[in-house]
Length: 392
Ligand code: SAH
Ligand code: SF4
Image (cartoon, rainbow, N blue to C red; front, side, top):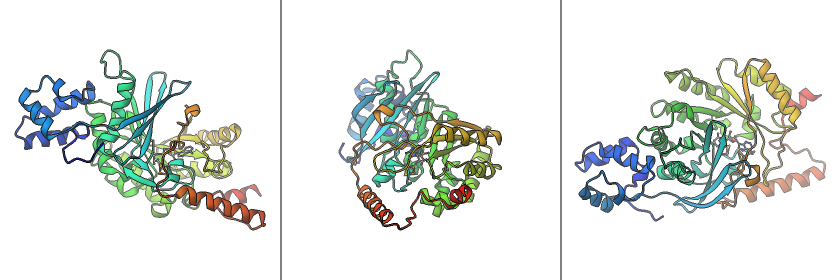
């Protein structure tokens, strides 16, 4: 896809399409027509948009374009999940994953190529940041999933009922584009997804969460992963900037702004020996006392650049029970599509490492290994004094 100044109709929200038509002296309802053609019927050829006059179609062909990201590969898992490799304009590749379950189909969408936030347990973070996806590249993933899964035939229910912004990248660091993409996903003239079924997952970009209520009423998931600042800062550098107290305050204020009763999901990736101790569960239960929420435990998914391990089923189950006994609704995310490398945090494929962060990571690992052999105590992100103290 080449850079162009022509507006891309596939990436314009209803408000932006209306503004475009108003500027051209056209009726505002043209905006609804375009949204329906592209996002309800899956039509990308302006000539086929037959309820639009021939004159206007010719004008649109000259002054606008309709372009979507490219699908490079489609992997289908034994369990019916799909992983698609998508090429975006910057030349990077991102991934999206479709997970069918009884009664619903969830699409996990990417918002950035790579990620700058460098969480120690995440394969995307190891790549560094490459580019922000455009609106058409974000909503285009939903377009493609519908196109590939027969969602534009209009006969049956659409295969994608839920969208989670849990693919590659930090959605709130690509704020404007993600907000417009969400508005298209939730527009009745487009995909018509309910606000309860579209979820933004964030590592906790507090100023962006504070702005969220002015742009969307989508559901929220927070990647917490630790019950205290000391440990969270070790595994999630963003915590140094926006510590837990500020984060929970801003989440509560977003939830309070919603007119319906909804609670955030607290995501907690369980990493063996790092944040999976019983005391961590007890501390988490106390930490979240004031915040009505659901907790989603995600057993760590291993990948080649990480030394972290997934906890045993019994420690996952102990962790869960402590939280349940404290009164929380807790789910454990089951690993799907392992055979196609589509589990949480594994979304990296053979995407280029733009910043050489993975080389730096390997070097750091080699240094700490040699220090270990020399009998030197090395503190790295797996050290957690609270756990050590509790085990004594
Ligand atoms: N940047 C956003 C959304 C993408 S990550 C965020 O951090 O929330 C989606 C979820 O997968 C997050 O909760 C993230 O912490 C989790 N995750 C990342 N790497 C993982 C891994 N290796 N195993 C299990 N979960 C992981
Ligand atoms: Fe970025 Fe989310 Fe991965 Fe952290 S977990 S590096 S915020 S994609």
